[in-house]
Image (cartoon, rainbow, N blue to C red; front, side):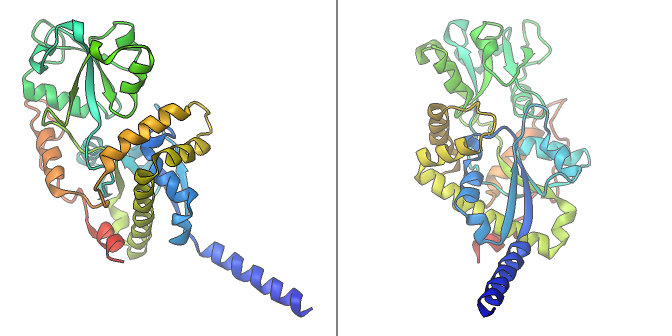
Length: 328
């Protein structure tokens, strides 16, 4: 009887501990892939559990807009690019950046070398593939700064609304397409195209890079100390996951594959992606670099007659969460 009571008590305590875990739902910007390895590593390695968190990671997709998921109550925190987040904030959806795992941009235009394009000034008169659904903002800002219209014509560029694939380049529907260093560029090479046949323009090198994968929450939730504490624990565990992924890229890629329910990802592609992603997160402790933030804002404001945002944002980021996460 004593043993039964002890066992019952132990089970009760275990159940109580499980119930005490705080739930967090993370909405990703895209499908399950090494772009989000740090979060899957933190989940798999028990870092979230150690912080008293029960984390659910929801993959994204072409029809999923993370800001709208957040606004609808479908997530506590989302992964989003800063241009889209700031544009949403100006339109009345008060997103706030609480952490910035990605320190650098991986975005670039990849062009056929035989297109005659040798520099950005040669974009005029060509067809450029561009992602939309919020991903077009950095491109439109860049073209505006160059003084290149995006409505076509000899002096402008023809913008092809690009799907999330590389077909427009391979099929010669576009002279250039949008690619990420860690994803679509590799897909072009995998299709048998030689690097010698391509010329690339990285947004970082062009001075128009904007911050990409950051963590965003609804501003109103930051008035709740319990929510801030929950996010601090989430960020702390997530950055542990990113540090581990950087140091163990192949193992991290395998963890991502284990969570890929679609079965669409391949081992070779995810390992290569993780290697590239590690270069973007390297040196980041999660705290937003205000200089990089201001560069992003300035790039988006410098949009001529059609800027991505029309005024300097206020309250678009906070260090409260990362301060609590890093100082514990």
